[in-house]
Image (cartoon, rainbow, N blue to C red; front, side, top):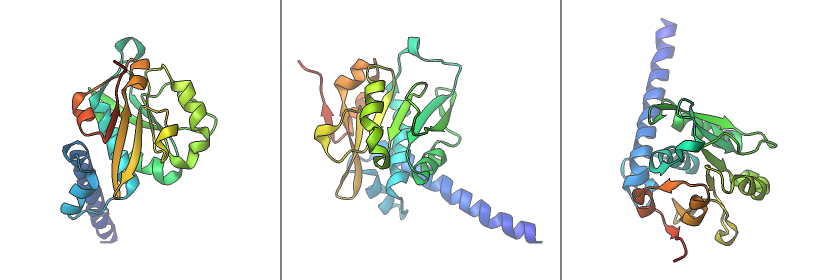
Amino acid sequence: MPHASLRAPRRRTAARRRLLAGALLAAALAVPAGPTAALAQAGLQASEYQVKAAFLCKFAGYVEWPAAADRPDGPFVIGVLGDDEVVQEVVRAASGLQVQGRPMTVRRLARNDGPAGVHILFIARSHAARQPELLAGARGQPTLTVTETDNAATVASIINFVLVDDKVRFDIALPLADQGNLKISARLLGVARKVATRPS
């Protein structure tokens, strides 16, 4: 039966994808030394953007958004400005996930779209030219901004991905989170590479 033979590989592919996604999400906050190390120990190969997509989804559970600025009856939205590969990895990672009972959805941002209506805004390095404009528009808003800028001196996002010894790590800027009234869990702060703290 040809249909059955076609379904079996698809089921195996879907199962491998779920296993990889589960391992990524479990490793994302459990291993301060970097999630890729845990994946290597598990015998799984993950691309840079698979790891970053897992982190983006995991961040949602460790950040508190202001109730007055949110719609608890609507979906939790991750906005992504990036190439097809980046968007597809975030869509895969977010598939079937919920945040406090709300479905997680991914919105691909067009080149002229702004950050309005998204909880997490991820700007891939391929679209870094729009980064200053988008971050300026999101500043002071209840939006968790995430970038992947190599030059830390120019970063103006709340979370910035960096590669350290081929491992995906991230830095957090608490003063920028404060501007949007976002509360970041101490557990997430504890696994960050660097945390820019509030002035004393």
